[in-house]
Image: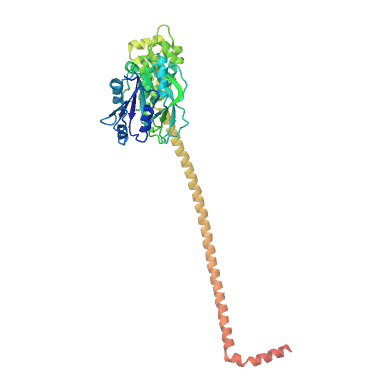
Length: 419
């Protein structure tokens, strides 16, 4: 019987899975088993996995893609022999003393349900990134729960070592949560158990530069997250102690009443006034609507908080869940931009017409000048022709017999004129 069961989920990481597996098998803490769950990889991952002969490895191939949650829960329930469960991924890496430090911490702190570590973000080329999202100081249970409520999950999944009985007490991973499955699990864990983060970079979490990770920063991921976080917030309805809820949301202290409290009302106020997310506003308004339409609850929140349906109606006009005002502002801005563009276009068209008129005038001037040049060329051509005709006449005279016969007379005549 081993102490630690490592469950490694695998899918299409043939380039990295060797390093992921080796970082488990080479741990300084050796009392472990490695359960590998391959989610029907289409690359060479499964063949790489099957080449390992270490007796601590048990490898399982899914019958079809998309069974990771079912197989993970089954591994925790039926396959894992250890009292402690570590989750690992096929593209991530552990420092070799990770488990040793975590096991020691849990042994020394029996009240702690799970221990995480800091995680270094690195890319597909193994280059460390400056992102420090998973490098956070330890906080109280309440502070960490508030962050989760506000959609901030700084707890790195492949860094966790958790007591197996915690899964049995708070429940396993839930279906239908593609982006927030681990965060939703942490919220249920933290509602019952404190946790601890070892402030050392003992986990290396790979994030691909093209955001192709399941949690990559893509539009569809952001939309899906908005739809999933309210499932996490629903877990807070399990709180039965006012001091606990105030430890999470100190601002709710103003609702303290010696007669008691209504958790759904308090959480609705947290959704509306603590969160900046429209999905949280929608949930808060929904919870208030449910309270108002339960006669008993409606009387309770009126007695405890003097909150009536008129207050609710006011809130439904203040919290723009569906971005109506924003869309109207965008429409006004769009129309203004169109009007401004039309003004610019009209000005450009007027300027163009003015330039066209100037060009037409210049063209007319050029045409007139060209006509004048043609006329002058014609006159010059006439002069040239006249001169040529004269030159021909002179040549003919000089070449004639009479000119040659009379040459002596012209010489004598010239001599007489000189004397």
